[in-house]
Image (tube, rainbow, N blue to C red; front, side):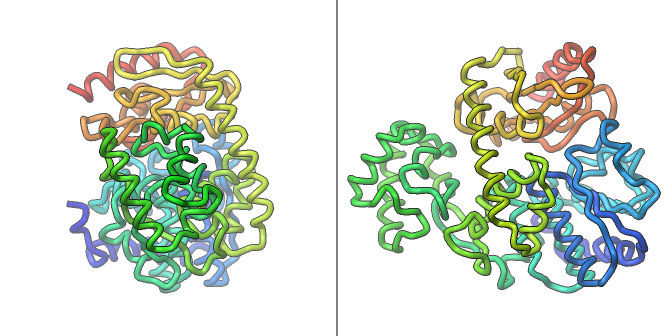
Length: 439
């Protein structure tokens, strides 16, 4: 069981990686541009800075042939949040990753080789944090470790095992309450309207219904969840659970543990880790990952990040409108969404929102594609119930692309790049592989 993997068990591997990084003379941290990648890059950057080593951080939207020429291969590279799936190119460098690996290499620290599930137990940022503790001791990047975990949707269950270490620090606090997004900054009426896990008939997607529900409880629709007193929260929870139970909602998903950063300013997206992860995603997905790294390190760039968040939300809204307008086409084992205009960097987020909000069926994975230079960006999203039945999108993408390094990711979320002439064959293979996984 992954929960039984202790810090003592993996400390030799963490220490070896820490020593190798400490030996590097010309380090360049190459990171992905999502919340976990940005957090990972920030953690290692913070450690190198504390050690007074000169370094650079190079965020990359994807690591594949389309970006290989941008990588300074002659330097001391540290790949974080990717690298294990591109091992023929990265095998001689330091890798800290949690995606499904291809084979072991000398300087590769991968969750799966530590007895941990990289889709459920630990993200790259948390691995980076554990390495940084070996380098400089416990540090404020405990924040980044948890933000990255949340960004990669690994906190549906409370943090456990070695991933719980940040909660024992002064930088992260665990709180019990509603698991919906927007606890710190969204007005309650919006907070309720955008509930998706579980879906609440009459409230989810229904502004009027949400408003009436709050008024019935004498709650001010413009207040935030965080601003409520303990008594108000308890009554709110109780009435929501009663409401959901009557309508067949999976009410056990409503309440859970979430994480706040007490050293960060309240009423901002930096306080609640789920909102912080979205803020970082906005920076990365809209060509400014350095802003995300800066805000994670404590730089005064919050206003710039907020501007990017507004753009992010606007483009996601447009993407959802396009998906609703176009609809999906049905394959035997997945549903396909073909976009012409959604940015390749957010197509996966649109697909994830669609399946979690039930805009598309939750009974089959959604595969979303959009044209990009030289081919198509492919993103797949599933649900936990589908992965419990055997769906593994990361492996399916790898097989369907016809090469070990052509695609991959996690069981619940994965991506690939497909050349223009190979799309039809790729989709047929995906259908076949997903069908085999469900047998």
